[in-house]
Amino acid sequence: MKERNPPHIALAHAYWRAHLSAGDIAIDATCGNGYDTLALAKLLLNHPDSLILGFDIQSSALEKTDSLLKQALTEEHLERVLFHRRCHSEIDQIPLPLPPKLIVYNLGYLPGADKSITTMTPSTLSSLEKAITLLTPEQGALSITCYPGHPEGKKEEDAVLEWAEKLPSERWQVCHHRWLNRGASPSLLWIRSTA
Amino acid sequence: MKERNPPHIALAHAYWRAHLSAGDIAIDATCGNGYDTLALAKLLLNHPDSLILGFDIQSSALEKTDSLLKQALTEEHLERVLFHRRCHSEIDQIPLPLPPKLIVYNLGYLPGADKSITTMTPSTLSSLEKAITLLTPEQGALSITCYPGHPEGKKEEDAVLEWAEKLPSERWQVCHHRWLNRGASPSLLWIRSTA
Image (tube, rainbow over the protein chains, first blue to last red):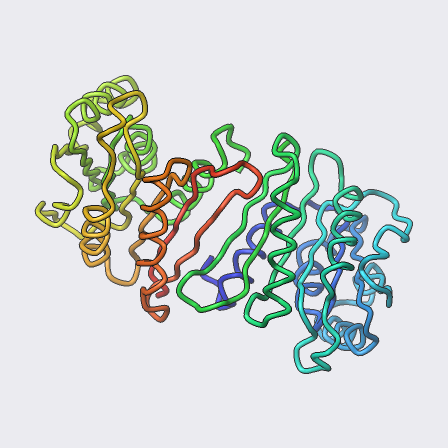
């Protein structure tokens, strides 16, 4: 955990590293600027069975992500990143050879783009409801970064935490991480199967 | 993190493991039933320079801890666990060959003993203020388990979080972990030097 990333990113990456294995499938439900997709690609794509799905409702986000990945990945690896320009609430509409082991959400708006296009609480909750049923039984995880630093982000975080509080504890371990001395900095919700 | 301990204990142990190195000194500021002291002993005492200090204000806690350790440790290891029957707010009164790398707090009352003898918020805050100045510069950490499931514990947690929020972020990384779908279950505060 000595990465130079902000602590919520360093911790998320540590969880992903510990959780994922060769051959797994992961979904980046909110590609945004592509950094999460790239981090997942680096963890997984050395194995030929691994796949990454990337969702974003904005073309500009997928273009940024694609451009970032092209700088860092081989052609063969790029072929196993499948982009979908659709809302993450349609996450259950894509056929997959295996259930995903990890689904990653980075809520809020695309940095540097139109701030009026942000994840909206109802579609986020609808997406999370679907995502949790898609995961590999017994071994799946959700990683959700929330941005309580702006009013809409705070409302969305509250709604996501309220949803997560109700997940059955015999089935899901739900840990919310807040960095206390950094103002309303991003928080990380890590939900994994208890099995 | 596939331990069968409750999640706050499993995560605390994972942090300690990642943080401690051979030869380090650690302090268990609240020995209680001794489980934290034992976990620290197992991580550290194979190295002949490592020391563990254990504090508790209750003789019965130190007796329980000593008895637990005697079942699990060699004589040579036991010699490097030094008990102090005094309040953890006197944590700065003990001379040490080196600053401690980790100080562990498990707040609340001793399980199975007199529930009226609990850590008290003023002495906890006083102890934490001293503890953070004792730590190895650049590499120290505090691990604090809070028990918001009873009213005094909730007040103590609130006070500790308020204290932690004010730690300078250029010096300390402060992460509070709550397990959301387990009622008011114990929470873990992990504070480490940002260096």
